[in-house]
Structure formats: C-alpha cells, structure tokens
Image 1 (spheres, helix red, strand yellow):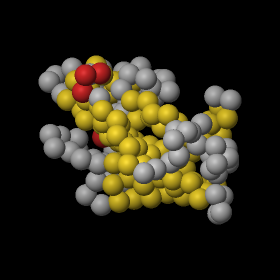
Image 2 (image 1 turned 90 degrees about the vertical axis):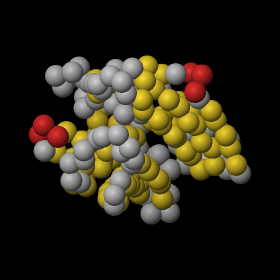
Image 3 (image 1 turned 45 degrees about the horizontal axis):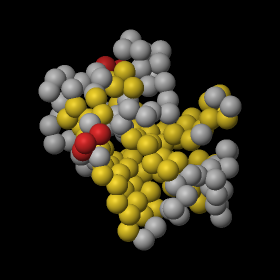
Length: 163
C-alpha cells in the first residue's frame, strides 16, 4: 500500500507532503517535502495528487494550496501497474497521537472531498467512513450527498461529511 499525503501539525510547527510505502502492514519508507504550516479555515482549498512513472520506476506526491510542493521516491512496492484503488478524506495524525488518530473538527463543520482517478475501469473508489488506515476524523459521512461520474478514463467521486 502507498499513501500520498499532506501532514499539517500546527502545534508542532510541522507540515509536509509525503509518500509512505507499506508492505505487510510495515512502513518500509517515508519521504517528505517540507511545506509551510497551513491554516485550515473556511474556504480553505487544497489537493493532494499521487502518480506513478513506471518507465522511471518512481512515484510522486504533489500538494497544492496557494502554491505547489512535490516529492518523488523510488516505487519500492511496485505500485505502477498494480494500482487499483483510491481513498481519501481528512484524517488525524496517527493512531498514537493524543486524539487517538482522529482529526477533530469544531461544530459545525462540513468537509467536501473529491477523489479523482485517471485510470481504466478496474479502479475502485472509497470515500468518507471507509478509511483504509488507523486514522479517522469526527465527521459523519453523508451518503445522500455522494456522486460518481466518469468521462473517458477519468472518474470522480464527490462526497460530503459533517458534524
């Protein structure tokens, strides 16, 4: 498994866009590019983008808000050619942090997530409460506000979560 992520820990003055590579539930590689700490507020808009380059044997993460940052690493897990699932949402730092891996949002908060994949139809998409990691958040997935659409080889899933 590979995680393309942006981490933002204002209390520790740490932020970065990272690639985490996992084999058999063991983290075998973490590589991050430093990013200025971001202030999450109403209207905040950013995205994380992950990609593979099978010819070069690399994977790349991009994080963009007011500008973009990127990091590239060797594809240690063979993601290129085997990538068939994507998930996404705002999650806590880790299962060992003080909130037990939960990103805690003040009420009322609404988060809108769009997951987009340019890929063959063999891809599956997962959003909202179907996290593949130990991290989570205190928002509730709103299934009635979910939509998926495809155009050519690009599919998008849009969801809403709220508290």
